[in-house]
Image (cartoon, rainbow, N blue to C red; front, top):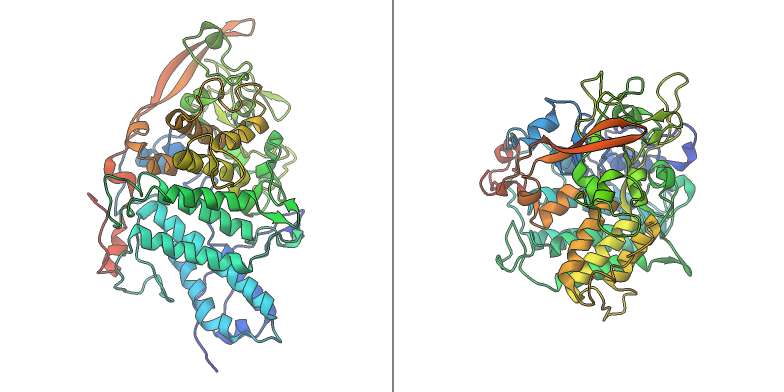
Length: 564
C-alpha cells in the first residue's frame, strides 16, 4: 500500500461562540502518514477543513490596515506604518507588503498531496463515492481560488502541477495569462461538477457550485479587462492574454450562471438587507455566496472606532473622494459647487453613505454622536484621530462592544456575494453588447442589472440612468458601472484590483487623497473646507507585483515582472 510523509501546517480553529454548529471546525493536524487520513473519515474532514485556513482573509490584514487604505477609499489614521510605506511606493522584491505566495503555495501543495496521496486510496467503507467526489471538489475549488489570487497580483506565474514544498528548489517557467486562466477555469469546471448547490447550516463556509461559478465570473472579468486583454498588446504573454473581445461574453455568461442558479425552482441567491451590516455580520445570508468564517470578536470595531469612544483606534478612515462618489437620494450627482449640496453635504444622500461611513453628526452604537468638526471629540486628543473627517461603519457589528461589559459578534469575511456578480454581469454585458441588449437571452441587460443594485440601495430616482445615459451609450454606462462598483463594493478589497485591471491606477492612485475640515458655526451649522490628506504613488510597473527575491532565488526559471 502506498505510504507517504505529509508536511502539514497548523490551522486555526474557526468557531463562533454562539453558533458552533454553523461553522467549519478546522483543527490542527499532525499526521506522519497518508493512511492516517484516508483510513479515517474524521481525519479526511479534518484535512479538508485545514485547507480552508489558506483561503484569503481581509479585515485589517496589514497590521490592522485594510487594502482600502492604499486606494482612494481610505486613509489609515496612524502614521509611519506598513501601509504608509506602501503608499509612498517604497516596496519591491525585497519588501512586498501584500505577498500571498508562501501561504498560497503551501495551500496548493496540500491540495496536490490530497489528490496524489489521499483521494485515490479512500475506500467505500470510509466514504461513499459521492462524498469522495464532493470532498475532492472542495479541494479543487480551494486550489483554484489560491491560484487566482496569484494571477491577479503577479500575472502569469509558475504553476505547480504536483506537490512541491514551499522551500524546495524548482525550475518552473511562468505560464502565460491565457494558460493560467485556462488552468484555473479547468479547476472551477471540475469542482462545479460535484459541489452541492446549497449546504446545510452546519456546513456554511464550505464551497458550493455558486462559489466555483462566482470564481469563474471574477476570473473571466479580469481576463477580459484592459490590463489582461488589450488590442495594443495582441499576443499571449505572462503580462496579457491574446486580445479577444469575445472574452467579455465569457465573463457575462459566467456571471449569468450564478444569477440563474436555482435550488429546484427557487433562485439560490438574492440581494439581502444592507441595514446594520447584516451581510457582513451574519453567518447565513441569501446574498453571500462564499465567505471565510472566523471567531466572534470585537477587534474590528475597536480598531476602526472613532477616537472619542474609549480606546477607539481610528483605523481605516474613508476619504472625501469616496464620500463624494455617493449620489444624492434622487439619484443625481453630488456637487460641492452646488450651494445647496455644500451647505448640507450629508443630507438626502444615497443610503449606502450612512450605512458604510460615519460622518459628523452620525449617532454610533446608540449613544455616541460623531464629532469630526475642529475641536470635536473625534478629532482631538489622539494621534489616531481621523485625518479625513470620516470613520468606517461598514462591517461593524452593532452588537460588538469593547468596554464595560464586552460583547463580540461574527465577522465572516465575504469573498463572493451576489451584488458583485450583478456588477460583473453589468460590466461584461455593457462591454460586449452595450447597455441595452441581451442577444443571448442571459436574462437581463447591463442597465437592468445596475437598476437592481441601485433599487436595493434605496435610491429614489435615476435607478437605471435612463435620464442621463442614452440607449446604446456604452461609454457613459461604463463610467456609471465603474462608479457603482466603487460605491457598492467599498472596502471589500475590489477597488485596488479594479483600478489595476481597468488600467486606471496610475491616474487615480497618483492623486493625493482628500478629506474635509469642518468648522462648527453653532446651532448645528457647519462650514466645510476640502483638504489634501495624503500623497499616493503608483508607477506603471506596479500594475503587477514583483516576485519576491526569495522566489527568484529558489526558481531559476522565474523571470521577474517588467521594470522590477
